[in-house]
Image (cartoon, rainbow, N blue to C red; front, side):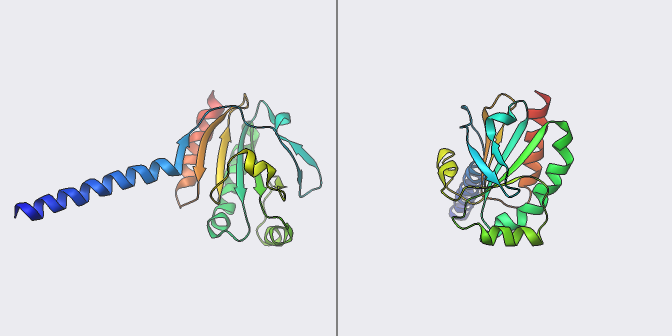
Amino acid sequence: MKNNMLKTLIVVGFTLVFATSTSYAASQTISGKAANFTLKSRSGKNIKLSELRGEVVMLNFWASWCGPCRKEMPLLEKIHKKYKRLGFTLLGVNVEQNSSAAKKYLKDVKVSFPVLFDSTNKTSKLYDVSAMPTTILIDRNGNKRFLHKGYKPGYENDYQKQIKKLLRE
C-alpha cells in the first residue's frame, strides 16, 4: 500500500514538473532590444522594423511545411484585425529559402497582415529561431518582451493577453 502511494506521488510530482516546464518553454518573458532588420514583403515593399517604433509588434516566424504554423495562421489573422487599430502590427516572417510554396499557401489562406520573406535566414538567426513557429512580441520602445516557441491550440489566448498588456503600457 505504501509503495503504491509513493509511486503515485512520484508520478504526480513528475507530471507537475513536466507540465510546468513545458508551459514555461512555450511562453517566456524575454528582454533586450529587438534587432533591426529590413525584409521585402509579399507586396514588394521593404519593411524595416525600426520604422514600426511606437507600435506593439508581433514577429511570427513560420514556414508553409509547418503544420502548427498552418493551424495558427487564421488565428493570427483574427488577432491582427482585432488589435491593428490600437497600435499593433503583426509581421509574418516566412523562413523558406524558396518562397513559392509560401506564396501558394497564402493564395488559399488569406491574411491581411504583412508577410515578409527571410530567404537567407539572416533575420531568423538574429532572433535565434530554433522552432517553428516562433513568435516574439516587441513593445512600443523596441524591446523584446515575450517569446513563444511552437504552437498548440490556446496559445492565441496568451498572445492576446500579452498584446493587451503591451498596448496598455
